[in-house]
Each structure stands twice: as structure tokens, then as C-alpha cells.
Amino acid sequence: MASRLSVRLRATLAATAIVAVALGVAASVLVGVLTGSLTRSASDEAARRAGATADVLAGGTVMLDASSIDATSAGAPASPAWTVDAPSATVVTVTRARTGAAWHSEPALLDPDVKIFTAPAPAVPTLSGPAPAAVRSSGGKAAPPPAAVQNTAGGAALRPAEVARWAPGESFALATMPVDTANGTLFVQARASLEPTADALTTLRGLLLPGIPALLLLVAALTWLAVGRALAPVSAIRAEMADITASDLHRRVPVPRSRDEIARLAETMNRTLDRLELAVSRHKRFVADAAHELRSPLAILRTRLELARPGPLAAEALTDVERIQALTSDLLLLARLDAGEPICHEEVDLGQVTAEEAARSRPRPEIEVTLEVAADTVILGSAGQLRRLVANLVDNAVRHASSAVTVRLATDGGEAVLDVLDDGPGIPAEHHEAVFDRFTRLDEARDRDAGGAGLGLAIARDIAVRHGGSLRVAGNDRGAWLQARFPVI
Image 1 (spheres, rainbow, N blue to C red):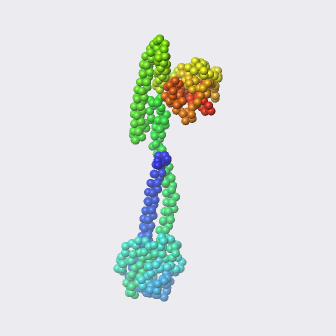
Image 2: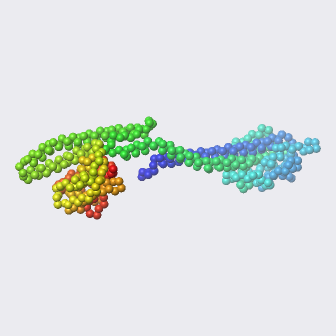
Image 3: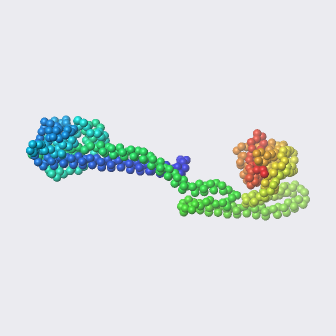
């Protein structure tokens, strides 16, 4: 099913959808890359802290104190401590050997984010005491661990850092490393908060959520304007083509200055109009020449028939010649109208023309013609063509009337209104426009004796249009009602 949306709207929707998909993919990739990068940074920081503490432990004599779980005995300030739920691991306080009268404490041993265990630490310890700012984890899942980090001081290899949940809603990156000391093997475990990662992602989402819709609106607006500008020549071509009729085939569509497909389309249409104008002009010249050449032989033939001995055959032949002469005259007039022959703009008293043509004798004298003509109804135009219009309308009404024909002429709001009514069978609603086609006769008028070739109303409408007016079938309960309108001066 063909889309009812305009090309401009479809192009705008398509461009906006493509940009939306591209931005969605780019945003997803950006968030994923940033998350991975920040998580790796936190894991590297945890590994660095564990390595620093391992260097201290591997560099000299240490003292183990398993009875305390904080570093205050070493003269260090109070800090949050870790407790372990697994019985196989014990958190110990480690200080360097005493020098003189004071204990010597290493800063690495006082880091609250580093703990030392006598046995392998659990993979997911829990945090107790005053907790740092909460950081939400991604469903508690561990990030892909980085490669192992080599400890340069003690020679022990660090285990890959892992992301683990410490308490509900909190997540950290962990790094664990075994260290061989004089007191045996110890296990150093360090952590690094993922709070900066969450903050960075929150800021990024705060920018993307309003930014992407705003960018899509901008893309839609720019696409709408750009496509409208690109299709503006198409609208001009369409408007010009809609106004071109058979009477003004000399007109051409505008060709845009851009050398694109639209310009080539306009050039092709103009070449087509050239060929069409040439074909129509040849046809008009042929009709005009044929009608003109037939007038002289028909006039001679009619004269001979009128001078011939009276008889049924001669009378019938004379009737046929008169019909052919009328048809030839109509064809010649149509050819002149189609050729756009300029009309003589003179002041014409339409009331006088209507009265004279309506009062003229016709083949059916039994039909009563009633005149209701307003005086001083003056319009600009050709008196000869207006006479032909009135004559055709009255002839058509007399031909189909049962007993009476009414001809009215009045003015209405700056227009001259000519109404011709008859009491005949009328014109069905479905044929209100068809009766103005050339060589069109309704079924009721098909018999040969009725006369007429189906050109009278077509000629009348062409004359009305050329005078800036109109001709139509008006509504009527009985009989036909033809109404012509002209601008008055």
C-alpha cells in the first residue's frame, strides 16, 4: 500500500530514525568503554596499594599482633577495620620493628583500604565500621579481571584484581597478593572504591538523556528545512504544470539553476511540452484548413440543390448539406478558439444580443420562447461569439423542450447571469459535466432528426470561459437549466 506521507515528511522521519539508531549505538558503546576503563583504573589502584604494602612487608622484620584488628597500637590514627566471616583467615595488625623508644610505622601499613591476613582472604569480605560513600554496583557482577601484576620487591605475583560487593549497594575493586616474610606467608588484600566510576557514569547519563532527544529534534528540523529547500523546484514545476491547458501549451515549467536530477526532469518536461504543442498546433491547423476548404464546395452544392427541381430527394439532400455546413462552421470556430485567437474586447449589450437571438425563428415553431431580459447589461467581449453562445443555448433548449423555453438575463453582484430553461426531459445529474464534452449527445438526443452534432454546448462553454465567465448545468426539478455568468463593467 502506497504511503500517504509526503516525501518531505518521509525523508525527515528516515533521517531522524537513522541518527537515533546511530546515537543509541554510540551512546551504548561509550558507556561500556567508559565503564570498563574506569573499572580497570580502580583495579589497577587496588593492585598498586596491595603491591606497596607487599613491598613494605617483604623489605624487613615485621611484628604480628593477632589480638588487635586496628593499627592504633602502632601509633596510627583510628581507621575503619575489616572483619572476616571465614574462620580460616585472621586479620592481623602488622608493624615494623621498634627503633629506640618508639615504634616505627609504615604509611602503607596504616592504609584503611589494605588488610593483611594469615590465611587466604575470602573473595567477598564485608565492611564494618564507618563505611565510605556508597557506590552502586552493576547487579553485583565482577568486571573482567585485568592481567596479574608482578611485585618487584618481594617477587610474588599479585592475583588479578576483582570487583566484589562488600555491603548492599556498595562495590569495590579488590587485589590480593601472597607475600613471603620472616613470619611466614602473609596475604595482602587491597580495595579501591568504584564510586568515581558511578559518578562519572551518572554525569554521562545526565548529559545523554536530554542531549540525544535535543539532537534528534535539531536533526529533524534541519532535515525538514533542507528537504523542503531541495523540493521547492518540484513544487514550482507542479504548480506550473497544473495551470497548463490545451489553450496555453506555449508555457514552460521553470528550470532550477542547479544541475541536478530535478533540473533534468524540468528540461525533459519542457521538451515534452514542445512536442505536445507542435502536435496540437498541427491538429488545429488541420481542422481549421479542412473546415475552411469544405465551406466553398458545400456552398456550391447547396446552391445547386436549391436551384434543382423540387422533390423529396433534393429536399433531403439539402437538409444534409445544411447539417454539414453547420458542422463545418462549428469545427472552424472550435479551431479558432483552440488556437487562442484573441477576442475583440468591446462593449457588448448582452441584453440586446440575447433578445435578438432568442427571438430568431427556429425549426420548431410550436415551442414558445419567453424572454425576461434586464436592460443595460453591458460586458466586454466579442459580439459575434456572444451571439453564438446565446444561439447555441436557445437552440439546445428548443430542440429538447416539450412546449416552452424561458430565457432570463439579470445582474447579480457584479455579474451578468443568463439562464436558459426548458420543460423537456432534463439532464441527469451524472451527465452535468459530460454534456459539455465535444461530440457528446445523451441517449434521448441520439435520433438523427433531432439535429445537432454534440458541439453546441462545448462551443458555448469555451466562449464563456474566454470571456472570463462560466457555464454550468443548474439544478431543476423538471427540464434542463443552463446558467452562464459573465463579469459586467
